[in-house]
Length: 64
Image 1: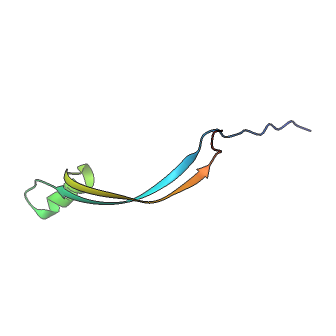
Image 2: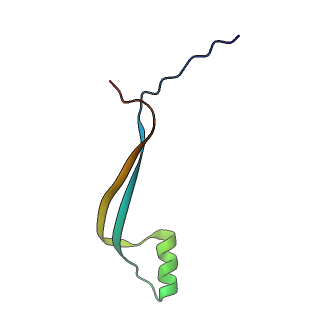
Image 3: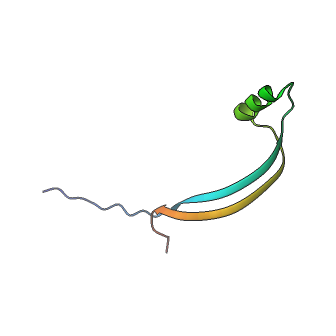
């Protein structure tokens, strides 16, 4: 018979889901190159709207 100690989680971990709409500028010679650069390196963000959609607790207990 073995002794098993239950581990109490003190920290709450959550998942936050956001909807993000951005305007991104890319400086490139053509559209194909611009898309590739956007996918690999990103670009210059000039506008960003963020909306929190949801948050869900994954595991843990809230600290008292």
